[in-house]
Amino acid sequence: MTLASFLPLAIELGPQGFWWMNVLFLVAIYSLLGLSLNLINGYARMFSLGHHGFWAMGAYGAAWFTIQFHGHMPGVPLFLMSCVFAMGVAAVGGLLIGLPCLRLRGDYLAIATLGFGEIVRIAIQNSPREALGGSLGLEVPRVIMDVTRKTKADFRVLMVAIGFVLVALTAWAIRNYIRSARGRAMLAVAQDETAAGLLGINPVRSKVLAFVAASAVAGLAGAVYAHYQGIITPLEFNFMEMVKIFLIVVLGGLGSISGCVFAAFLLIFVEQWLAKLPADAGFFKDWWQVEYAAILVLLMIFRPRGIFGPREITDVWRDLKAKWAKKRSAA
Image (cartoon, rainbow, N blue to C red; front, side):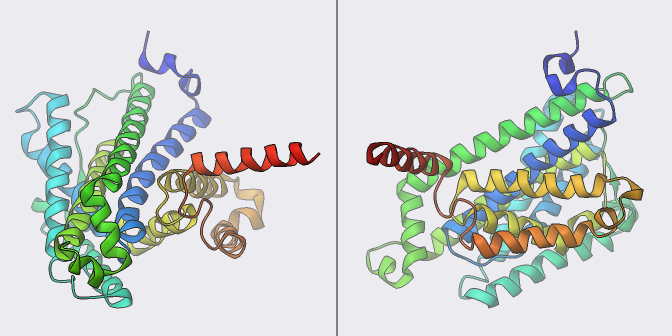
């Protein structure tokens, strides 16, 4: 019995089943990216637009590490070590951009981080072919398991499972961090940096820690993405991907963990469904990017604070129950 037989979506995976697996995997990856960016933009209240750079650093870091040690280490340990290495590379990038940009605010910080993300992408694109593959990209060996025609479904199910386990662990870690002493210090700095400094809180430490932690999670997302894709190119980490990550954070709600996951599923599903329409679908097929943008505009008009705002799904459910109970009692 194969791994795929345990999941209803993976039984006898055909084109539709593989499409769903791909959608769910992308939801997991963009949830990780959204959660990590939310730590900077939502909780620390810093305007960063360079997250695609950390994502690229993680993906290429994992790819390079896997290529270098392929055949010298067992598959699963190599996969785990490449993920750790990718997190370290991205965390160093977060430290390098975090320290010099601490005095910047608002749009200036956004421009600086955006420049960093584009520098990373262009540097990779112009790198020597033998180093990072240049514009042609890198082929990443599949080390976690042998991927053949028969085991392709098992591989996809396994990677989707790994992706959502990482999303759950990341959400749990961020939730506990926000409730910890360091997390509350970061929230205090976000509210009023001067007042927090007078209380003995080190603003520099809080900001740098947020950048490093968020970039490490983005690097982890890049590592898992690289192992799933099998080949990565610099064009996959362009500015439009950064816009998509930012929209996930804004639509889900700044400071909402469950909002990021929900918005990631909504955006990725709509995008993939519109792109999947047959060629004879006419307007719906040719203008899917316009329709995608229109849905986002409507959501921002009717929900300017995002789907959940700063609340979690449990808070929304509790409020709905309270309103329903009030209506029943009034009736």
